[in-house]
Length: 155
Image 1 (tube, rainbow, N blue to C red):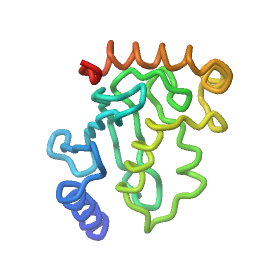
Image 2 (image 1 turned 90 degrees about the vertical axis):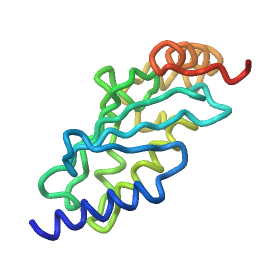
Image 3 (image 1 turned 45 degrees about the vertical axis):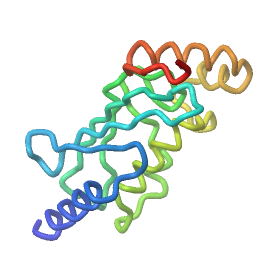
Image 4 (image 1 turned 120 degrees about the vertical axis):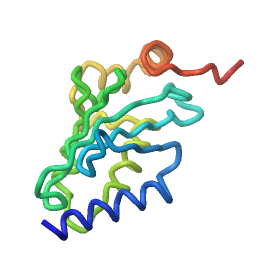
């Protein structure tokens, strides 16, 4: 248990000192095992300027198990279900104990640049992303403005 706490403290400090781009973090109820992360949607994407809040809870056996990640902010994305659960099959398949939360957050940032329709929670949104991209972009941009408090980049 001591190693677990030391690991959590180390990762938390790393995130405060050198977070991934457009990412900020705070502890929920001063708990090292429960974080609220905010990711600002990357420029030149339909998520640009949106503030996407994530709830991350670390299991008691972290880093041997992946953390639970949930979008608190509603997002139109094929890899996120209606409850905000991120399709983390890729994390679970390729997870190893020396991996850090930093890597997960870099992945979360990159998923806002490009969806992964091959690992989708929502097949309809994935199909729309691949076949009717303009329609997907319009809806995702609308949701970003509506739910993620996006400021207007083009003003």
